[in-house]
Image 1 (spheres, rainbow, N blue to C red):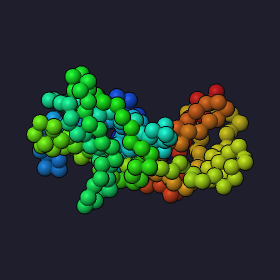
Image 2 (cartoon, rainbow, N blue to C red; image 1 turned 90 degrees about the vertical axis):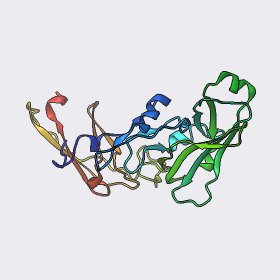
Image 3 (cartoon, one colour; image 1 turned 45 degrees about the vertical axis):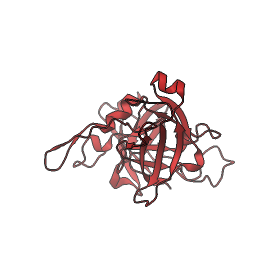
Image 4 (cartoon, rainbow, N blue to C red; image 1 turned 90 degrees about the horizontal axis):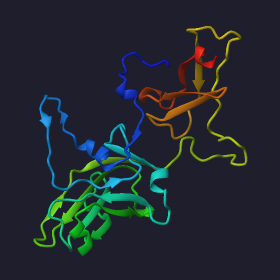
Length: 247
């Protein structure tokens, strides 16, 4: 693939599905600041784990797409309210998904811990309704108000990016078997596929293009992928495929 030489491998790494809450909690690992000091934050309350979360995402801790939020249109986004020490019956758990800088964030989900849930002391499964999802960059965190003391504790605030559109945007000719705004890749295969030969491929820019989109190209049933870099967004994309893989 043809990448800009100053880019590192991690900058081109596509977002991966965080399949478990443990994987999601890795987002809370301390990171080294510009001064070289490790930023360590310890909280008794962990952020809620949303099924379908992906990372890394440019400008956010994690991302959600349309499919994740709409996986169950009647219920919404599945979330796991992670268990915490001292869980008691009557504790009030609130999930916040609010725009950065919102003066009065409103909970998108509220759960009162039942007697059974308190006795078990395990994670609680719930859903955030589709209509409460916040498009774009927003804060994501959980607040617990203890029944015994009415003291409120919050998890670390994470930044989430929710993209509610699909690559290509609306299909202007839905009656056709392909998406009207996603044009076919352009390449010319040589008559002889010699070892070491690199075949250039170009792909036109498309609506709703975003960094770390993954382009998948099928050539004779052989699949090649290219991850969109930041400087490729909104531009025609060029990359190389190895001809000897097509033999």
